[in-house]
Length: 171
Image (cartoon, rainbow, N blue to C red):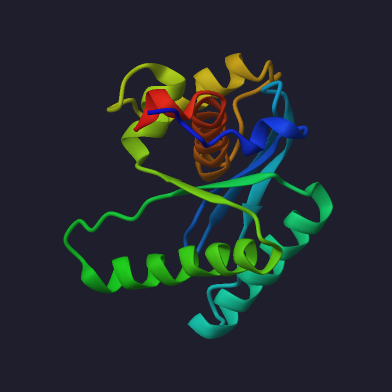
């Protein structure tokens, strides 16, 4: 059986990685040549209601999409530790990214944190500092990307780039 996920190879790849959160949503944009384009974070004021914070996240992601015209969006898949309320809030922040992508018809790829760490560090249990240092090295940045959420988003974008280059190997 042949793999048919090759549509992203037809035009220049721009990948937007998103590490969703209600307090800090990290983002990172890379080219298909694995060159950094932009990274940072969205920080809605904590004094706002959750609805207002979700709107800020959504609007900011729409601006990033408009500015960078990504061909794919990589987002961290959700996991639940002990607090279901936190998981619900995180899922809503993730939903803002999914909605912004859907409005523009951009494919979304979800990756577990362990998979993104494995893609950049070679170890799915790498620390945040190890991820930051490897992102710095891989993208030839003068300093490790700050904050950690931006570094995580860049790791997701790199993971997505590897996946879209050879999707048949990543099933």
